[in-house]
Length: 334
Ligand code: LMR
Image 1 (cartoon, protein in one colour):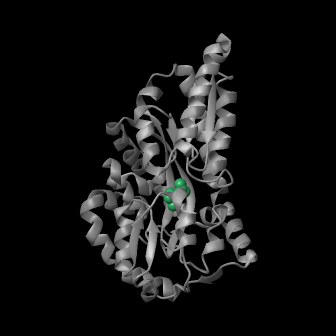
Image 2 (image 1 turned 120 degrees about the vertical axis):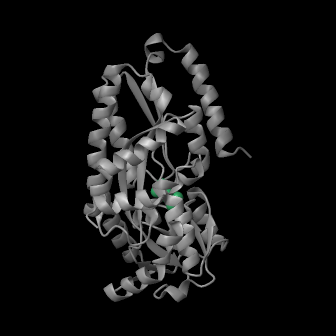
Image 3 (image 1 turned 60 degrees about the vertical axis):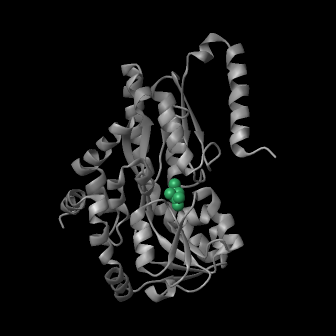
């Protein structure tokens, strides 16, 4: 059977054969392959499509942006390698996925109950601290262009998750962040790192019992069809760094890069502008579909969860860096 990767490789070979035969004008285009792992109908998927449209317009067709959603080209870990190798030019991985590259300071965004809302987050991501965090990517051959929001995460499983004790012994799929692993351990759950593209099947077959994600990811991957219970806990944030291969970016003609920067600034405003609404709509749609029973934590229950998870801050401060945690809190006036 042909795997997705093999198909992608074959598609690449066919494209190469065609491009060799194509007229010069088509060959002159600068190709930006933008690979991501979520559905087109999500804040990130829509942001990528918006960037494609604006980038092509602002560079007057000099650039051809090709968006590959849903892990069509690469899964989580592979896409990072592909970017560094230059096989793709642009990605928007979640901030929880930079640890394996040695950039664990981004895991500050995974600390439980740190961000109260989007406004608090923006103080970090749209300010000097956000810039400083992105600049650390340069040592890995990567340039960080922007932060895109997804949203606040909910917990799901096939059993109710109202109290922190309800997590005892549950196998929970997580992203590669050690901070997320730490808070799952703190809950008594068994965290299992797994690529996003594999989560639906793992939930369906019982390889894992539950997971966490913002509603838009849960809904567009149909996870609600294989999870009987979900708790709107808003215990953590999921957002993205839009990144490019540094060598590719630095090598672009100045006017082209300026057009792309303008397109990225506008696509960022657009993606961040729709993120909350996309998640609200996804949550409503899942509630309406009736496959999952939703429970919303009261303020007291949230405070109880936060208290249970508080030790994660000390346990992970060495990994994330005390300075980074202080800078993020400082930006939010904490
Ligand atoms: C996940 O793996 O759960 C998310 O990071 C997917 C995504 O990119 O939103």
